[in-house]
Length: 430
Image 1 (cartoon, rainbow, N blue to C red):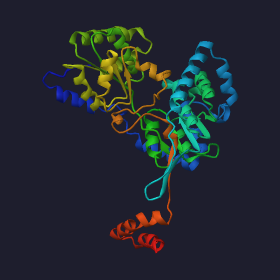
Image 2 (cartoon, rainbow, N blue to C red; image 1 turned 90 degrees about the vertical axis):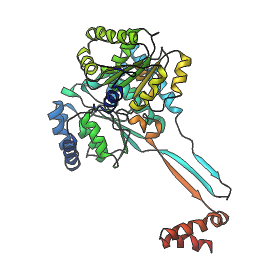
Image 3 (cartoon, one colour; image 1 turned 135 degrees about the horizontal axis):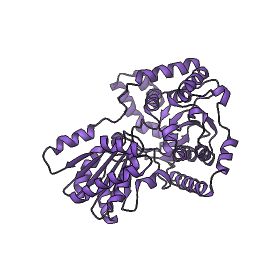
Image 4 (cartoon, helix red, strand yellow; image 1 turned 180 degrees about the horizontal axis):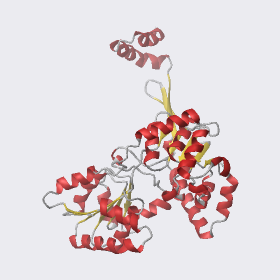
């Protein structure tokens, strides 16, 4: 764990190293992914079946390619009442929050009498990737499916690996709540390729969303342009800005909530109190051995954790903006949280006040937990309804409207050396 003091010598260089630290996989997977995509394009289901045997150790033809809606409904019915209620609460809140994101169509006339506007429509089909193994999260199922449903997508396809042929029943139950149309038991870069290009069994989609490992992320990068994607996501991140009025164990738990995702996750604390910094670091050390994810947390904290003291908490905000973190907690009194938040420019999602842990945002808050990582919050946003929609602009002119703006178009076409453009307009002006 790095311990930095913003007032100390050498801080600028040390913080630069922290900002520029590359935590994505060091493996050069680009060529491997390109080969997988090419093979799925040419061989389709045959390639998917072979990759599934090699990577997930089961036979699709024997165990079944898909999971039915009836199986998902049965998994939902088999849940404990407590877990069923929790998933339904999460779904209701996620659905309601994203309904507020639906964009409005525009249709108006300007001063020339020209009619202008734009109309929004959902894509026809969306593909949702849901990881298996270490990261089998029903919450991600809801976070990806429900915005697509709210947007009005007609066909939503889920791809999820089932290592050893085992299916996660809570993931299936979440798919039932979300109203999934198809579930295919295929994972990895090959699943992303199948969504983009289609196979005999699996029809292609228009947008692919969802988290995954380095191969899945690279596959999404390579198929972008054939289909839309949400983002290329990397390891999880949390930055906590906290004063000494917090319980050190609570802040330590907040930091570890992301450290337990993966050894490459990153957890950073900013505080204006050196003694509190010591107390949080000590609490982290005490908590790690008590939890089942200790090995992952220990690796993450040792390699990527940081505790940084600053003269004032306001001094932390420009540093946070440079990190552009996936999650930012402002663990201070409400008024101060609002004042600090007003200065934040770059963060995927911000959690205001002492009683708003980031972990709530992962499950039941409502805003999407699919967020930009790796400093991408400088230029991108979390998953939303509009990721499953596209906007079509329109224009209608009458004689007066064309007369008002047409001559300028003719002049500009001439300046660009495009005489047919100019002729298309000028003949109408006559």
